[in-house]
Length: 109
Image (cartoon, rainbow, N blue to C red):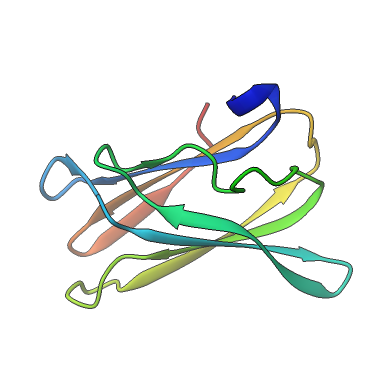
């Protein structure tokens, strides 16, 4: 975990090509106490990863919204996933598997 602090990471894989999905923009919002605030984001690297979606911000309890912008040339152009974080003392990994006509995500390790 970056700097021994809790964070959220992601890994986007294109199962249609068998390759990492590079250049996918991810926007992270925190939905807390009836407010929506920017909480980070980034672009997947050459391995399809963002190691710290929070961009150095502190992980707090609440609901985080990850919006993956997959591209205008795809059937699924984007997907949004809401995560409930109840333990801010651990890190979370949220992989996304994309294919031409399907999407799948899960809580990784």
